[in-house]
Length: 426
Image (cartoon, rainbow, N blue to C red; front, side, top):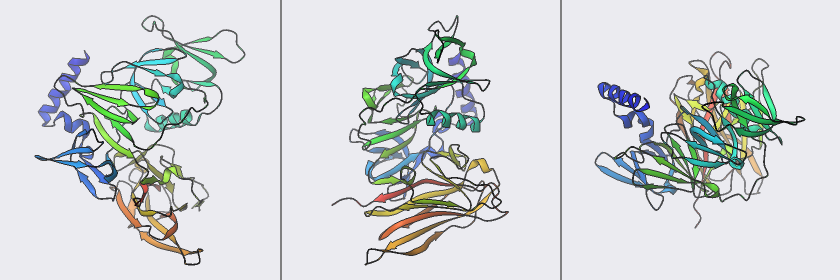
């Protein structure tokens, strides 16, 4: 039945004159941004054995060193299947095969069967809510859960607390989730159809692996992995992750193993994302008394970063009128970002983005704040614009968002992929 549906979809795409590759990747998966902010165009062909990006530009190939790349493509929204949220930030979209206290076994039309240690998971979303806002709220609840007990989120809104023991392996007969609730001698048995998600208790962190020289890889089914390396073997793509975990992505015979990759970002010490840094200070001046905080790697409402119909992995959400200041590394070279209103604002909202810098003086004290960038008015639905600011001699910088038309209504501003590039060491 599933194969028939796939063939029907391919036939529809053929009638529309759209290739499967264009449908799966889209135009946003044919472009990227270099370390210095320059656009990079091309269709992904592979990562070679030296970790270089190989792109196809017409009848030619272009090789991009990982140190020359900021990111390529855009993350995709998750589709069918459960979401396994891992402690390293990865998300695996797949079907659950079995689950006990030690491990979860998953498989899908894309992923070969794999066993994921429960100790490496933050949570599992079995049935994502239909609305993006509710999905984001549930994901934040799971990611922020740090207590010494598991949580079971039921579809009616109730939450059970205790120790989750897994679910019945006889799912076709009696699918049940088992949880030992505090104070009860026997485990509670809950119909699998009533369960929406699980958040696992916070476990002591093991020895952290070196975060440098890694890749964040996004796939078209919404899976996003933090990998040490990505290697092709025939029509399979092997993702090597933390703690010797390997996931195998499979394609149809004769298919392109890189076909499903829609996003790549090297984790490189020469690039520091502001959302990974501790701010010096934050100030918000409410227009009508409603206070807003900033959000790291989320929009100001707490949802995923989305502007111009595209998703973003990194960035900062702010509301007008607000200011967020950072210490600038001594070896910083440039500040890069894209600017836009979050898609949650719809066609409403209008802001001005500004960047202020504070430079060091010869007396090792700091001078006053200087405005070094001001955008035009940015409105809801606008395509994100770009900003590039030199940080030579700068000690501190501040991101400022001011309201424009109609007060601050829906002024959900996003600093997308906001990052500082570092001078290479000699």
